[in-house]
Length: 53
View (tube, rainbow, N blue to C red):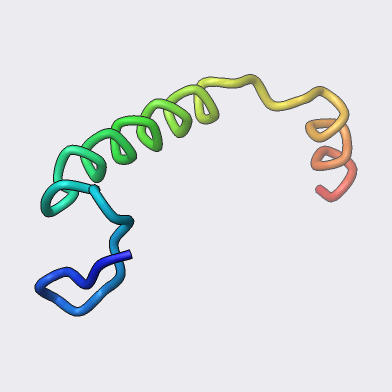
C-alpha cells in the first residue's frame, strides 16, 4: 500500500484520488436504497403494527 497525499492508505496501483470509485459506490448505494424503499411492507409486519394501536 502507498500513502496518499492526505496520509491515508491506498492500495498500490489505485491510480489517483478515487473519485471514480467514490462515484461508483455512491451510485450503488443509491440504487440499493431506491430498491429498498420501493419494496412493500410485509403483511406480517403490518398485522403486528395494527395490534399496537
